[in-house]
Structures are given as structure tokens and as C-alpha cells.
Image (cartoon, rainbow, N blue to C red; front, side):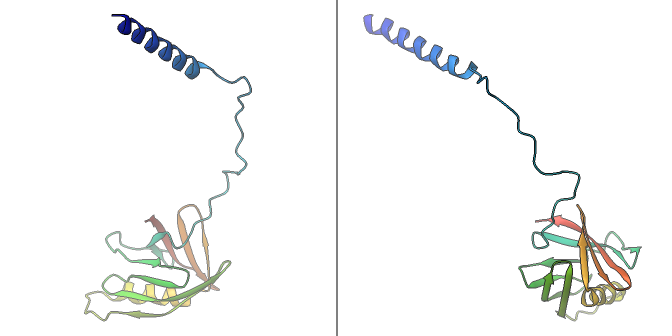
Length: 152
């Protein structure tokens, strides 16, 4: 009986000590303001996304067309042209980009229009820009393709 009472007293003391520590708030608590300006879009990493084509030469691409490019690492690309898969090399420096030469499978497809447009846009892109959601491939004539980031 003596050990039982001592056990209860010991448990009560441990419980009170734990509650006291949880409820104690430091008087020097301050909230730091963020140092980053969240109004500017975040830097988008080309490699960590699958870039799905949404527009080609200013015209919307059919939503069912799963045409995309993926930057596999710092110098390789792969993707899907709508019927055929492709792969190749790329190099980027700042806002400049060079994609190609590209290699693709040669399957027989019903509609080669989007395939040839997209592969031509990729190989003729000279620069790019990003915002919080899109990649814009450009040359001297303007935006060749607008691609949406699907993060992996």
C-alpha cells in the first residue's frame, strides 16, 4: 500500500512538471518578417517539371494532346510529340537556350501537324522565360510555345 501511494504521488508530480513546462511562454517571443519579397514569382527549375504544351504560335493546343518536354538533367531532354517520343540535348545559359538535335521514334500517326510544329519550335528556340507556372520558348519572332509546369 505504501508503494502504491508513493507511485501515485510520483506520477502526480511528473504530470504537474510536464504541464508547467508546456504552458510556459517566453517573454522574448518575436515573429520574424520574411526576407523574401513574395510579389516576385519564384525561380522555376526546368529540370523538376514536365512541361506540357498549352499554346503553339499563340494558338491553344487541344487539351487531349499530351505533348510535353522534360529536361532530364543539365543537358538532356526527352518528351512526347503527340504520337512519337523524342530525346536529345540542350544547353542553357541565363535566358538563352539551344535544344537539339532531337531524335524521335517514327511511328505512323494520324496527325503529324502538332508533332512537326512542336519539334520545330523546340529546335528553333533561342531563349526562354518563366513565370510562376509557365515556360515560354522564344526566338527573334516572339513566343514559339507556351508550356505549363506539371511538377514531378
